[in-house]
Length: 181
Ligand code: GDP
Ligand code: MG
Image (cartoon, rainbow, N blue to C red; front, top):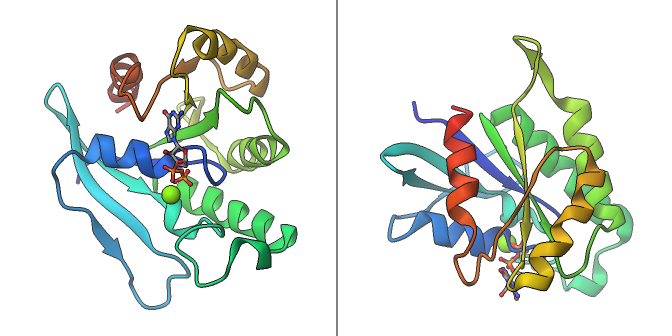
């Protein structure tokens, strides 16, 4: 029973890129259990010998992996999918990586996801549960890493700037992550 870490965020923030980086060579499996409304990718990962499962909720991105073209997705459907994703993550995860984008800065969809996650968190031993780590992806260079401070406004504590493409910054993030288990 390894801890489950859900990667959550609006479409295009880099969830799948981070998932693939953390999953390394390991096999990802698709949970296509009948009756579930969405596919999720699971993989095993570890950091300094601490093993955990990671979940890419990206299969439910309305703009990817869908038979519908992005242009046919209404903003109502888009918001509903973000809502479903956030709620599923809180229900099943032992920790949540909430991804945002250093290049775009805070968007209304980021605020929506943040609010939903916080509203659904329970209190365990007086602490919000599951813990949410705020991951500022696409912080590919010093300028974008500095932009990460903007995300303190989300009220989720320290933002962890990373570049999922370059693989930078993930050490500090993973140290903080495994400390929550
Ligand atoms: P998802 O929709 O959240 O799963 O996002 P993807 O992983 O599919 O990535 C969306 C786009 O962002 C792709 O074009 C990625 O190459 C790009 N991307 C992901 N991570 C980074 C990053 O660290 N830096 C930059 N510059 N682009 C990234
Ligand atoms: Mg994806």
